Length: 158
Image (cartoon, rainbow, N blue to C red; front, side, top):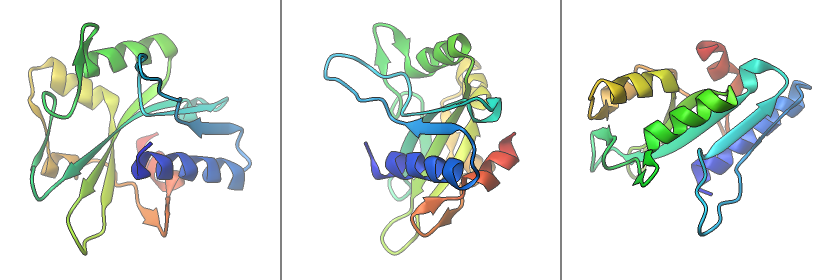
């Protein structure tokens, strides 16, 4: 589990606990010969928090775009965007792409939350990916010390 995934999981769980919301965020254990659909799952009776989140991290010094060919996987079962889209449809979860922009030494990392429908529409229409400037148009997942401010971000996307 990456630091970004761990921090997001911990932030959701802290949010649920502090606000007395029945919910849990977790990352399914990945086994060597089995794939996972997404990086972070969030379960809750509240449909706003029944989520699947795919995380991607991008070094902005070496890349100015998150490419579907380079940053997403392809297997015998299809492209990762297609596999996640099928999972979302079958599970009834709301999907998001969380993108962490690593901006280099001395600069704070920033993260953004892209609704999965935006990912699917761009992929399905033949788009190559998302530029950093396009990513920055989506809601930023603000940080407070080691935690992400889940409430603020979710209010923007609900």
